[in-house]
Length: 177
Image (cartoon, rainbow, N blue to C red; front, side, top):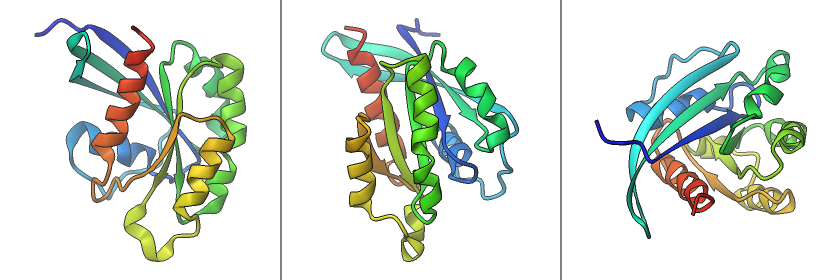
């Protein structure tokens, strides 16, 4: 087993049914599971990846903490923020209220860990015909809230799944050098 150079704790946040668990499982297994139930509390995933850096190849362990999106689990967030290296905030491109919830989530995060990189992720681009949030609006929202970036993905089809995890991993690694 190779030596782990870095371990990063990533929080997967957002309202219920935005696809946090689907995105996590798609990244870990490469498979979309259409029968995922709502997360009760927190789900935990681990993936070890090899990353090329200016300093050479590094082995990075990603710990993905998928926090249930229902309001009744929000009290867990301050505790899970501690020791976190990065955040994905997911919204559903077909449900505007899921993007409107961004501020209530990020306010808690910034109180506990103001320097943490937060990546805004619009999910379910496979439902383009039902889209209610234009991609440009998501990008503007990320910019207005000083987030590190915005991307749209499809956990179902796999669009940009590897890319979004790679980009956040690269950002977290840069903070180490």
